[in-house]
Length: 369
Image (cartoon, rainbow, N blue to C red; front, top):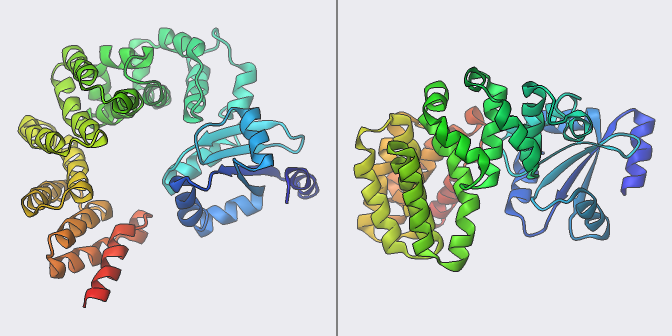
């Protein structure tokens, strides 16, 4: 079915049109189709409310949509009314709960990206600006002028409003470490941390770091990267030191300097000794996953096991358990790997996740046995 036919069907059934734009080389696109859209609640909701299309970004129809809506992140989820007018857009890989939250926003005129674009100005209220900034940056778009107006209107007590924090967080994560949004977060880090916790700060600036990291990785610019880390530590102090722990291993892994990456993780453990348990658990899990993914030496695998065990003490989740199972499997501790992988699988339905690694390990163990 093409878009023209979908619009005709939408009019006949009094529905709107939902378009998923994907690429054949996008792993996140495959994951969303296999894990999210096959969920009964998700498919039922879309069947009841939309005529759905799945369009390859590289097809003739896809190229037209990509150009019209300036898409560059996939999967992209576009909502169109019966008159072929855009209502809403969001992009990226996400869990079921986040996907359905964004889906519900597509039905609310006060949260629809393209509806807000028509009515929100620099003089709009902080509430309207926050909604606009949130959905704009969530769609991987930018509007520096409106972002600047939004930041200027935020007053001290506004940060307590979740809608304003969500907008600030989304903009920060998409604009990089040298953006106006990051500068605002850095200046108000204590208020944000008191309201939402240190983990929120790390995750938010971590998103910005991924944006900023790419050019340094492409050029293998170690000097420039170090200067950026010094800037963060100078501006954020103790929090900046924690953020260094989060970013440094990732940078060195990306430039394939595995020895330095490992040493940065080990150094990070010492830095984190007196940090919040949530922050430690978050970083320990990331580092343990790095060990599983990039290293084969038994001593490093054992170190990764120590880290994931610390994370499991705080959060005995499916993700943490399957990371542990992976480390045990690589270290040839098959009996315990099987037991932990089975525990991870048991948590799948409860947590609404797919324990892909745990299933893979169990299949591998069957062939070994």
